[in-house]
Amino acid sequence: MRASGIAVLFSNMFFKKKESKVQAPEEVLAMLGSLQNKINELEGKISLLEEENKKMIQKVGMIRFNPFSGTGGDQSFSLALLNKENDGLTITSYYSNGGSSVYGKPIKKGKSRYPLSNEEEKAIKDAIVR
Image (tube, rainbow, N blue to C red):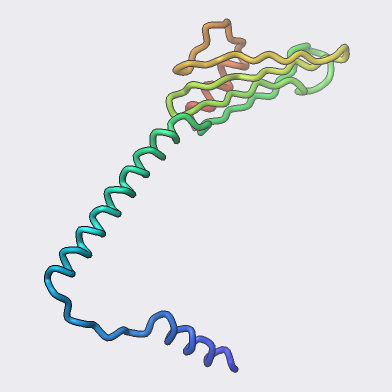
């Protein structure tokens, strides 16, 4: 079967006009009621998804830097992971020849109850702006 024949067959299977039947008003009203129930159900699910979505990480900011001038490159970093309401956390890793240190700090409304480094503040700001 040629490509055009397949297209016609597909079109006939899925897009063929169906003969319409005249339906009683009660049947139409029942169908409309069923559709309205389905719409209400879907609206409820959408609202739930929108609420859950607010809590998911949506904003990310990352800054690479060198905390020890004169040694190595920008191997250290601060990473901010925030949700829609700017709640989340920062993860900061300091790298040196002697090893690495990693710190995490909770973030609420773009602020932390712990002192933030300049790099952490910049990562948060970059995440919020995006």
